[in-house]
Image (tube, rainbow over all chains, first blue to last red; front, side, top):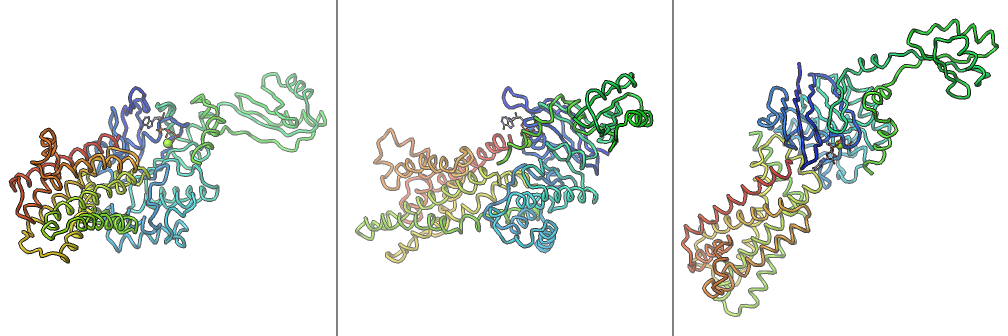
Length: 321
Length: 244
Ligand SMILES: Nc1ncnc2c1ncn2[C@@H]1O[C@H](COP(=O)(O)OP(=O)(O)OP(=O)(O)O)[C@@H](O)[C@H]1O
Ligand SMILES: [Mg+2]
């Protein structure tokens, strides 16, 4: 069942089209990832889905509600974690959570219990009394997530949940997202991080320059990329000589000496290892390692979007200082 | 019930975070006090004191309310926490009422500071308290919503302050408090009748000194009308600009 249904959604800012007629759907209970470079339109899409921006055209349905006419009903069942914290600087972590809970009509005893629980869960219990502005970046992000889930939303929107925070906090957040999902929360997240998308998401949408170029299951994407078989041998000694010899002996197979001491073999057919091992033995070459190279989601992304992975990575580093 | 809870917690949060914070308390309280002192010291007879009271009250409200909105709205908008409120499952009208009710209370309290001072110095008998209270509330509501309109029209806190003065100072001189409307240059008089404070001040003059020159029900209607229009334009602007 689709819990989010988007049809031909468009957002224009003047002459500029930030989101250009995108259509996709999110299934109930899945983790759906929106992957794309800076300025692709990820945040704009989230804003339209959550009621912070008005679509220029197109249709949104969330949990059966009309995304524009019934947005207040939608907002009751969604949680939103924006890319930058939007909590109150002067208020303590605990007060921030209590305030957010009350916006959703949670009773005093209920919200107090829930807030304490969340502070505990996010290892923020000791700092719950500190003003939000005194929190570190990672703590801020965690509290913002806590505020987003305090009312047990059915759908959680996360805009770049791990950008700009340290590895350990990021890992903690990812674990949390998985737990939430396991408990039945549908997750919609955006990210720059391919590894994150690969690790967390069931399905992915690639968005570039306001267009969704592909929506697919992560599993299927990987299989699609697995069109070639690649084996890499770590050998000694090594060199151009070896490469030439190999090419002569195995004419049908693509062979490349990739670094000084490894050699990469690519073929459309499954690669049989024995003939190679025999060859190496005859030539008196030591093989210390042989590994099968699987395609990564990175390769898939580059192939589909035509965007270099370096570019995607470099962009995210410059952000949010 | 849910909505009421949201309303109440937005209101109390603003009270705790802004209205009861030392800088704002002092700004809010010192301002009417200094107005009061300034005018009371200048006036030498006790009759004068009572004449000037409606004006001081009206200005205390005007300055108290309009300056608060720059903080509760413009500042929160700038720090993005206002987005959280826009994303909450409460209607924009209720949200904006919650955001302005604090300022309205603040304005009402501000009005009673000069009154308290005056009560120590002069006899206040003969005041129509009901009308006074009604006048105070209506001036507080109207000037709060004027502050709201200004706060949603700008993006920086200082702009909100500057822009408020653009309205406040002309109103001070044109509303008939210190210079009677009849004595204003003829070409300025129509302008006076466009300003909401003129009606509020007249209402207070009527209540305190039985001296108004505009019919009571006209003043009431005009103030209520102003409040409604200012509120509607403000929410419309928010829908247009902040839910972009
Ligand atoms: N309010 C606005 N007015 C004008 N242009 C805007 C506005 N908001 C976003 N844009 C433009 O729309 C495009 C998409 O922006 P958006 O923030 O959705 O990208 P994003 O995918 O979230 O990028 P990032 O990874 O940097 O967060 C950008 O070119 C941006 O400059
Ligand atoms: Mg973004």
